[in-house]
Amino acid sequence: MFHLYKTDVGAFFTFRRMYMTNILMSLASVVLLSGCATILKSSNEMIYIQSDPPGARAIVNGLEAGATPITYPVNGTKDQIITLTKEGYAPQTMYITSSVGAGWVIADILCGFWPVVIDAATGQWKSLDQKAVYGILQRQ
Image 1 (spheres, rainbow, N blue to C red):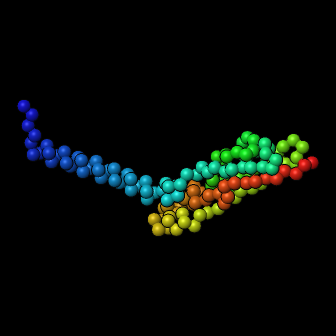
Image 2: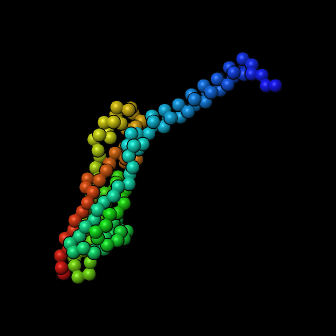
């Protein structure tokens, strides 16, 4: 027959308390040692590329994206260079810039020193200034 002694129960609760403390300390470390934007915001954003005439070849940051109109995933923390080409038309290059979002900076400052350092170093404060481009190609 199995007997549960008072010392066994005490040891169980001590172990459980230590286990929960370790979990809470780990979660606190993740929150305190990373920035708000790093935790809450994805760096991937979608841009919509359209052209007149449609069917132009879209090249984003040197990589073939496809024919317009197209929705294409990009890193929202970096500036984007979009080039449209089509036979019989002059190529057109457009730029989308990324800038720092004031809301993320304020949230990080309220959370303390480390979130500011982490988000500034990773660039997670940044997001694209626009989500779509429309290029009008000129005949050659």
